Length: 213
View 1 (cartoon, rainbow, N blue to C red):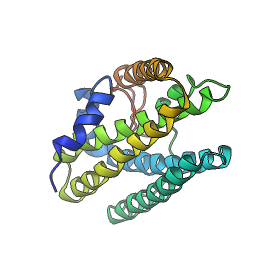
View 2: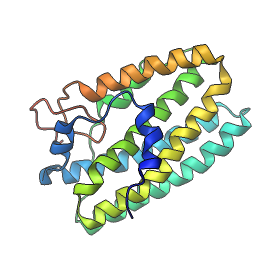
View 3: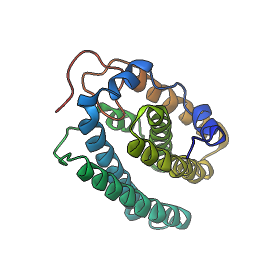
View 4: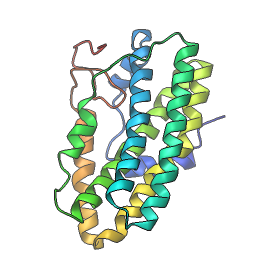
């Protein structure tokens, strides 16, 4: 399977920046393989939990319930696939601290509705799009097994980011939506480009501190 440039084009256009080369070089270091896969598993698990949380909080949103139900099942399936891959590589699923990335994005979410839901969905779209972009950046340089797995995730991650945007757009007028989207795109770019003290799947470029635990 090869990476489809047409699939990635909307993702790249949506994000304000590409992943720094310094992060890619760090991610490809053999001593980071376990951290990368454990954090990937955590990301899939958190994505499923986020979808379920939205379903519990917004029971009156029929479109949201449908998309988030399917997304949660898919994310949990990906979680199981990561665990299976880790077992094949003798990597133990151990506790790992969360990166600053998702927390940094969620700090900008408004507290009152419907702003809270709009912002939460935009954040979800950015996280999915960044995941897709990073899978594509890493895949060509990985082992055949990891390469095939990461490439297999690209289509679903690209679809997920569109699902979040589709749900968010009707909830406010177009000008406000674009304003909130611009705000979070800038915030996300800063988190991705500024030096990070620990290595994680969504971390910024390394600042020299070992992030193995």
